[in-house]
Amino acid sequence: MKFIVLLLLATSVSVSQVNFDDYFLNKSLRVDFYHTGDAQIEIISFDEMIEEPYWGGSHVNLIDDFKYGNYFLEVYDFESNRLIYSRGFSTLFQEWQTTAQSKKLDMSFSGSVSFPFPKNKIVMKLFRRDRKNNFNEIFDLEISPDDYFIKNDNRKQFENFKIHFSGDSKEKLDIVFIPDGYTKEEMDKFRNDCKRFSDYLFNYEPFKSSPAMINTWGIAAPSDESGTDIPGEDIWVNTLLNSSFYTFDSERYLMTTDYKSVKDLAANAPYDQIIILVNTDKYGGGGIYNFYLTTAADHPVSEKIFIHEFGHSFAGLADEYYTSDVSYEDFYPLDVEPWEPNITTMVDFESKWKNIINSETPIPTPNEDSFKDVIGAFEGAGYMAKGIYRSSLSSIMITLSAESFNEVSKDVLGKLIKFYAE
Image 1 (cartoon, rainbow, N blue to C red):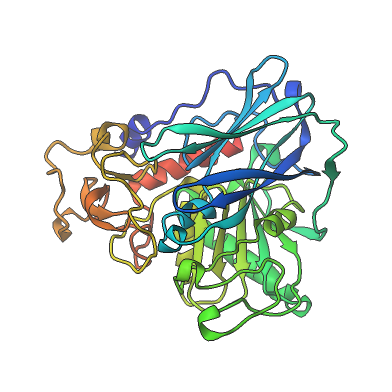
Image 2: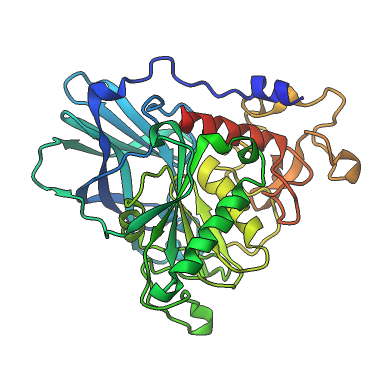
């Protein structure tokens, strides 16, 4: 069955990938901006450009054919108009637009994208999905690599250290752990926490089978005070990344709106994925695709929180549960196929896992224990009990009591590991 999954859920990788050395230097260009708007409106306003010393991504797979995420970045060579880099991602701003608050208030959130530093003039374009899941251009910027307004290495500089090291970053998936709420006296604790969480990752497939394809790094960056903000308990802490519980008024949603500081800190090492370890034993965390992941470091189920949120941040996996206190409203329109690879509205089920379901399995598949080992279409996912379907009765994207990702999610995760590690 696993072989069939790999064949039928294959996501194509472009056969016309770009030669890295023709267009890029082995460092990064970061473009910071702001999302401003309300529930219906988004304006992208330019902030600044920063040259950073590392490029952690593949030198081979520069074009993203997965097309996951609510946003999409494209970089074009100005002279030839050739697409030379692309990447999908999602944002905290887009999530906020699905909350009740966004219907009453205008707000701004910091945003940022990074890509290999270009040798020649380029055009950067940002796209966003509409409610029908079509990408529409929302921002473009011409950039010359010799522009004297590009700041040189503007990050907050801290020591990086290797946790699990397999080799050259251009041939590995690079994951960086950054701290929030660890004081100078707690840096040894942070290093130990990094090792613990790095080890957690390799307890789960497909990461367990792929240690030689992955590097994990840590950044030793102390905060002035220990812990994190808990607004509902009137606790306010001076930390490096300004993390906080009660994001969108959801007590367990532990995030930060200070994305510039997150990117500044992560830039101290090569990275493809950012993980923020928050020095707290209170239950909470969060993960957004190709944005960042947060997790409480010391809660008894922090391992499962981390793995669940890594499914979001690394592979764009949707939540498969359907009863919760999340603040989102109408997160998935039922007349559109979600872009997330592990859920479906049946609008375009053929593009998901329909072809690997046994012909004897009923569709919809009953939520009964007799189908616990079956790939099917189980109703209830994406915060909704009706109209959205998942592929298994249980998985770690449904409940932290589960011991693994389901087969559909493992297949997606495996493909993305290879994408970054080639």
